Length: 228
Ligand code: CDP
Image (cartoon, rainbow, N blue to C red):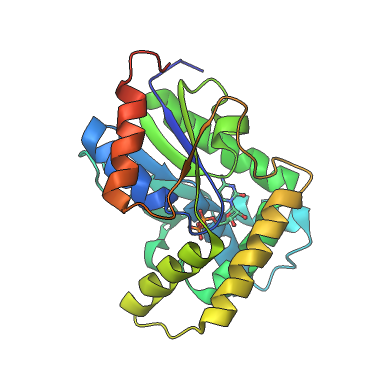
């Protein structure tokens, strides 16, 4: 893998990684990749095809039959689009049904292997700000800039609630809290590539920061002479 000027952003559910990645990419003129959307795409395919979520081989077969492809917008800060085969899934991925099963799908080692291969291929082509759970630890361990973005559970519940409301989806705060807690538990406790900060990641607690302030901090880490 070429050593490009990549930025890895990892962190728990709804910690603001995608927004931060998009803003930072825009400032730096990099592309961004939200890797969670790739796992969500496979979770969506599994739901519509009624594939057993515990059947690792069946999930891999599904991803081979409908290859998950990301189209990055090469203009700075542009939005990514996700396809399975020829079908665009971009707008289908944030439903509660997909969110409820994605961590089960993402826990399978062979599923992760296929996703990581594609993520590294993308990173080989251009400087990228990549957001996920295992970017600094597994996908791009050589990335010169690594951030672990956290926020209190309350702040994360509030943010996800506001996003859902803006999308016209009615979910109770209690339900959102349970969903976030459960996903964090599964992501942190899985055997393969569990969610944890890389040893050389800088931890940013965004509980009291706006998205722009988070992006400022990350951009200043990238631009600091001692970084990388
Ligand atoms: O945006 P949000 O924090 O809700 O989650 P996401 O980034 O869309 O990721 C959805 C799920 O995909 C996570 O809860 C993980 O189970 C999985 N995931 C992963 O295992 N590895 C990644 N690099 C990204 C996501």
